[in-house]
Length: 171
Image (tube, rainbow, N blue to C red; front, top):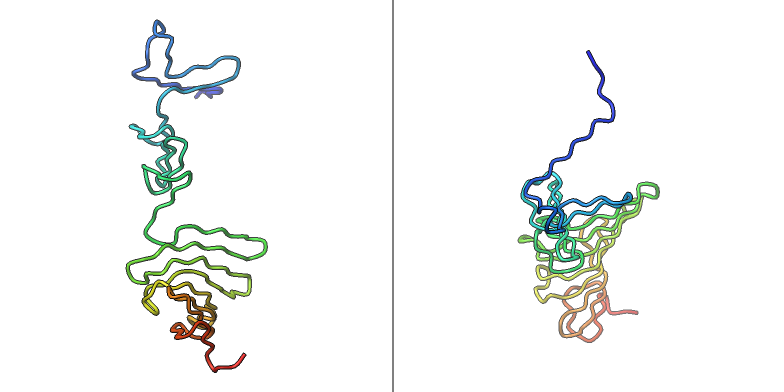
């Protein structure tokens, strides 16, 4: 039996020749540089950096998660909740949800360690007019403030019929 220490492997294929002064891999004074696309767990990278772990791409200085063709500096594409920021120490969360085929709702949800959830977003399913809502999600969907496309504001109602419509009629 034998032990192997300091084993290093390097595999470069299709690299330009030294005569062109254009290298696929260049190392000089501790600085490493790759010319062309680099794939991690990907044999045919489609961007400058193509990491095949959950479809993470870097293409034209743009980062794509779930898309190989990002249209923005950060482009996240998926079928469910788009982003989760979770503070494991304080127990708070910020969740960004894009609309789905069943809810037609795009929202940002705020949660604290007591599981009190507030949402702000747009809704085409509730009143059907693409309004803006602020809702408490504790014990169900309790919309507290709703602004429809006509500019009417509802407090306690998702169907404001006036510029300011307060459920119960008192301030």
